[in-house]
Length: 186
Image (cartoon, rainbow, N blue to C red; front, side):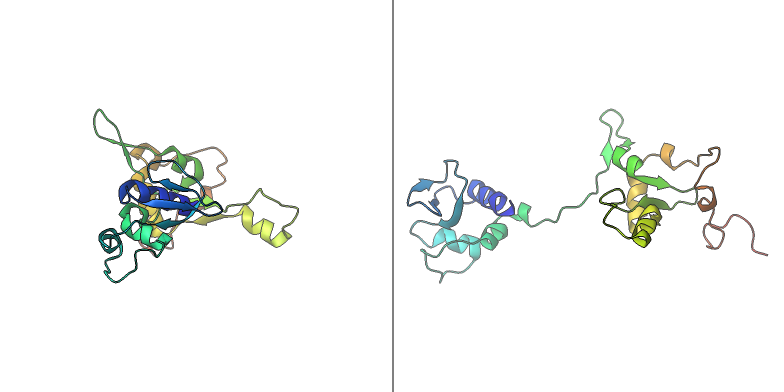
């Protein structure tokens, strides 16, 4: 999948005159046609395109271009995927809540965020009792993730909520930590 994406992006951005050779057949097609199962990329005569991509003049023109050459040539393929979505409204430019955060995480009154472990409902017949007990528990996110989650929700979701028979009631206060303590230390 990544190889197909890299090759197609490489073909669109850098190589308009490249000849692609199919892996199993002897047919040759140009870069403008859509082809799916290409394993190597061969370029035409001339060292200028290869030197622009790799930066080396001494490489032979008949040497096939690899996947790493395609990734180096296209900077949009070098970025790592990450979730840092902060949405803004079009009218006033205010931040909007990312609904996936509200659905998957719970914010405690002292500012911490908790979440469940992944796979806690999957293949329970295979898991031992100790592992199932650990999967039923919640875990805290780290400080960097908590800061990011605070940016992804609005003030409405950060406000403390009080429910009858709240199962999270013992976790809403954190008296042992200096910055979240509400009662004075005796």
